[in-house]
Amino acid sequence: MTTDAPSQETTDGFHLIIDALKLNGIDTIFGLPGIPITDFARKAQAAGLRVISFRHEQNAGNAAAIAGFLTQKPGICLTVSAPGFLNGLTALTNATTNCFPMILVSGSSEREIVDLQQGDYEEMDQLAIAKPLCKAAFRVLHAEDIGVGIARAIRAAVSGRPGGVYLDLPAKLFAQSMDAEAGRKSLIKVVDPAPRQIPAPDAVQRALDLLRSAKRPLIVLGKGAAYAQADADIRALVERTGIPYLPMSMAKGLLPDTHEQSAAAARSYVLPEADVVMIIGARLNWLLSHGKGKTWGGKSHKDWGGQKFIQIDISPQEADSNVRIDAPVVGDIGSCVSALAAIDANEGPDWPKPPAEWTGAIAERRNKNVAKMGETLARDPVPMNFHSALNVVRDIIRANPDAILVNEGANALDFTRSIVDMYQPRKRLDVGTWGIMGIGMGFAVGAAVVSGGQVIAIEGDSAFGFSGMEVETICRYNLPVCVVIFNNNGVYGGTDVNPAGGPDVAPTAFVKGARYDKMIEAFGGVGANATTPAELRRAMEEALRSKKPTLINAVIDEAAGTESGRITSLNPQSAKKK
Ligand code: FYN
Ligand code: ADP
Image 1: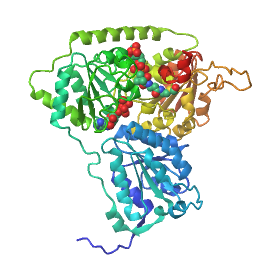
Image 2 (image 1 turned 180 degrees about the horizontal axis):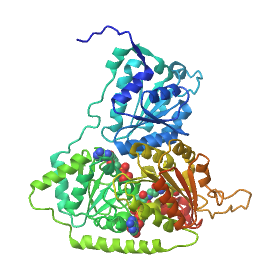
Image 3 (image 1 turned 45 degrees about the vertical axis):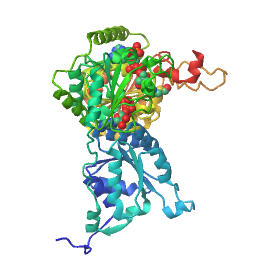
């Protein structure tokens, strides 16, 4: 029999938060200690949680976000108030934009003073600021509400379309005490935090009918499909139908990039030519040219190309966001893909393979592109360029398919995406929906911590600068991270000069011949300078063999890059120049 009589023991906000996280299977916190959460971080570690401390909150936030993507559990980022909170906010908003589940937990100043704007230490109405920038935002004022607050944050982060959640914890909450037994009872173990969402049978039938009518069908796989962890079902659907597929960047490896149905190397052919496109866990945003325009065979940049679309997505609002979706299938990808397979199986005859004319034309285009790429990769120019360096990375990933590849930059991003084949799901992590710079070291640390495995980060020298100080974090936790900086002396390249001839260098230029490898040596890691593919190969192989924190300064021809990589057309200045 239970009794409501208070027990002798008391607990407090600190312990209730820790207990609530642990109760819900959260075992890691990424963050940066300081007032008012320093003691909380210590107590969390003492209670057995893994607490990974960073040098800047944005990187801790990015680590939490990618941990969420990889594990389907919300990644937790812990920050101090106002400035720390704001530093974490970019990562929270980026997580929301990318549909990664994370919770930004920030300490905050005294409510009464903040609300009267009386000038508290780090005063800021954090909840109000966070609200429009994330999926949900909550504040807990009383210790007895901690259980509900954390339960709500977890549900909001992982249910439906995943996203970022802000949880505001005022300084006074941590030390509030209450009866221990009542505290225990107030905690909630969230039951079924991301409920399956079964698609309606008629929606599935509509999609199948449309797909069966196609002459030139195409499947587009996005990072939502990678997130869903329905790998075997997705592969079975693709292989059973024989339909060519195009992986979005972070969906590479969901099926091996070397798969004969991959149309990645024929992208600019398949998009305008396809007649029915089934999109699984991707959005028709800028990365897919909004489903219209010349990329899709339209006459002008706003014209519909004539394709019919099937879209499988957990968000009922996603359909029609850019062009008409003829067959929306709303549900979680695992359930949708198995529903498609199940209804299809009932229909009897095996799936009609797409016409050989279509698959043959794709194969021809793909083989031509692959051969052309092969020729480029075989060259060994001096100085080294992106291709000759990436030829090494490509071999290393082929030999180590379970290594996680983090990738950011402009040219360093775009060339890596098309040159380096991925073989397993969720092994390629990059700049995502925003094309954001600065995710590099946060993602690398987060991925190494949650996977326990090797991470390789291919970084443009500019991109690396946003999070470079975290090489200390990599060394401090002795993580198996090999960072390769493609150093071409600047943003896009290092050849720009100051047109006014003044003492300042051009805005895109960095210090020439910088030795980034020396940075990691300062913290006890392994640094290497590579000016040839052979040197790069040796250094990367040694990094993977030793598993030691390593930073390789790969010296790239400073004239090798193009402005903005493959998205030059988005840069008004460059467009004018053209
Ligand atoms: C792809 N390709 C290949 C291969 N894979 N050729 C040979 N072998 C292989 N394995 C070809 C593919 O067919 C394309 O050629 C080309 O390589 C590029 O492929 P990609 O990368 O898939 O296509 P594209 O056009 O670059 O994709 C558009 C995009 C992409 C918008 C989805 O650019 C992207 O993800 N961009 C993100 C950029 C970003 O976020 N930047 C950060 C900001 S940088 P063709 O078919 O001949 O076209 C700040 O300045
Ligand atoms: P990409 O950038 O690879 O094209 P996006 O981030 O644009 O991918 O799209 C991912 C889509 O996947 C989003 O629309 C999101 O709602 C959806 N999504 C995420 N997780 C799931 C899931 N488990 N089931 C169904 N859809 C999902």
